[in-house]
Image 1 (cartoon, rainbow over the protein chains, first blue to last red):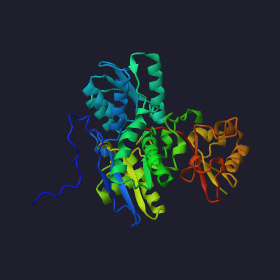
Image 2 (image 1 turned 45 degrees about the horizontal axis):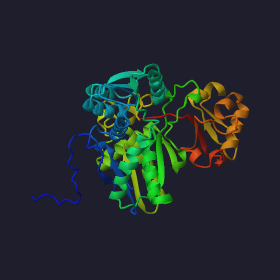
Image 3 (image 1 turned 30 degrees about the horizontal axis):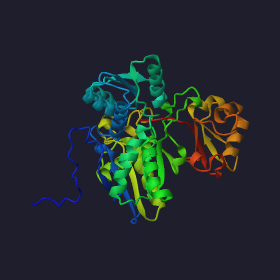
Image 4 (image 1 turned 135 degrees about the horizontal axis):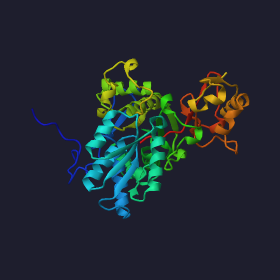
Length: 324
Length: 90
């Protein structure tokens, strides 16, 4: 059997090390999930990054930014709040570059996140799960203020985060789709993916492109705040850049995570199911064009939860697990 | 009449209810009707300038009203408003 003709160059690229191979992810059309023939639905597979999530781009940008500014040198302790993926990506970067890493992470994430962080040699400090990522941010800020040995990249307030997408993800999308994008859909966590891609896409395409945020409808067990004033909006978020902002329940997110798997063969994490659901809805509102959404991570670190194999009603801790 | 879904953090201010009804043709009117019935919610929902508190997200069904028309967003009797604290991920 002859080799299939190669349409893309480079074929995944040739790199000097694993860090350089971050990005340049595939974009895949989802014909079965597209609700209309004239609208093409595309998944940008950030799950193909080395540690399996979009956060590899962010972690590299955060560390390189700190190095360029002379803020860190080998041996510097890095401290960062995370719901998991940024910590795992920093774990890889810090291990390779010789920075001891501490992450502050809510205690109600899937156990695979703990294993992966330990695998990369990170020290984990758990925050109260009922406060979600807000609790991790609060605790990490307290720790950083109390101990000058820490350098905190602070993905929530560091422009290197959106710039990783402005100079990376968005450029790749525009190139692959020949500057023809009607809507871009991504999850809202730190805001980095939406802000960086949103800015670049709007600069190139103007209002012809709609920037759409999908966000989790937090389960009640993770709304353990004392008052609404304990809410947190990452400083890098500029809501004026968003055309739509839509929440998705955990149940719907899991239904669509399964649809990605069953109908398109995409093995993605739970937030990507939510993002796909919103992308399909936006696609249904258009008559034609390309709708791109970000598959933020792969499914490996959710296997123990049973989301891919158990009936929805048998998934334990559906509402008390922090999936994003 | 529109319904409002109350987050756990606000329930003590509405007598423990998870969901309440409040009349109004836009988000401002519906939330003001909620405040009139349950005055303890006012300081959590609104700032001194009468705008939504920064860390409160209000959704018309499932869309954030801040990226619609804010407090002026039209509400139909069959609609549901959802109040949630702003939460991060990452």
